Length: 155
Ligand code: ADP
Image 1: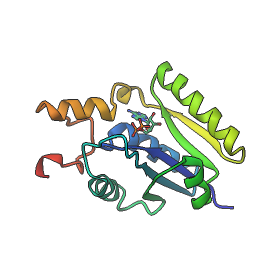
Image 2: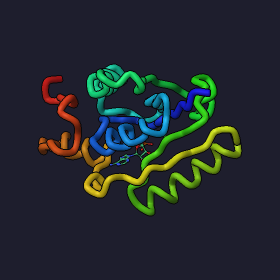
Image 3: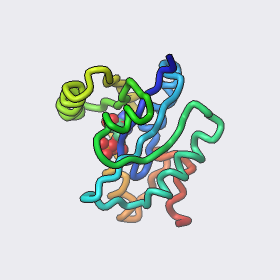
């Protein structure tokens, strides 16, 4: 059976922290589906099309990485994709507490789906999409935080 993982998130925008988790997960899974969750109550900074196109550009030479979007429960999206693993990154103990709740509720809803956590690389610990959005909003430079493909200035 193919080992398929879903990496859910907003990816608004995708960061070097996300890319590191995805690349490291490739040795564990046959396919990593980046699932961009659409939350109608959360306004994103970048459009879904833009977020998808950056991720496609970053992983254009990696056929094991696929990007898609979904609404509703992550476990339902996993079932649709025949994925038995949810991939998440852990930066800090605050991430752990947050992820523990989501992961345990997900396994109560779908006990055939395991959540797998990868620790962030130390250098990427302070990077989060929300801080990046703040820096961008205020005209700061996000080189070294997002992949070069995230060319938000030309948009
Ligand atoms: P969410 O909208 O759920 O906050 P994000 O797009 O911010 O989703 O992140 C998706 C996943 O990537 C989460 O598991 C998050 O912990 C992880 N992640 C975010 N930033 C980093 C980072 N710098 N290093 C490792 N993992 C990260």
